[in-house]
Length: 211
Image (cartoon, rainbow, N blue to C red):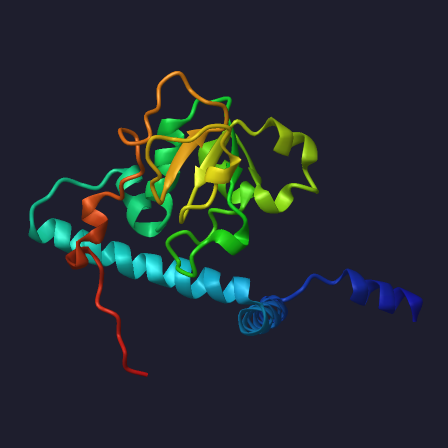
């Protein structure tokens, strides 16, 4: 009896058994993903706003590019369309030295729009701005050492001018400025300007308002 059980245990799986097992695993994974999509906002955002929306947007832009016989988009241009705050992130990178420690605005100061959705997140911003370091105003108590080393302020929606140790020549709604007074004030000459092409409605697919 023991030998028969051992032989049955060592018997290789048939193709049918393997197929059934794989189908069962796939079914469980599908149920898990559906549950995550329905219950966790992050998964819903990743699927609808990141994956689906980005694909529709890039397909629309590519069609318009081909119809107008325009050159292929660069990686930076694609990011400008896919990530609504990328124009500001790119501005921060171009306007600060590589060793800068940038103070980001708190979540409460961010406008209730998708354009500046994650500008307050130090991890999100460092992904694009590395080797620069970022610390949010919300992290003042959790990262006090890094907060004390901040030497630039990312100004969004007018927030951040009270962090400066001087009065700038001009107060732009969006900018990035050193906390210590610089030798020359370049506020007006180096303000954050959104690329005009991002304001062109022809680059954006029409929103389907039907259910």
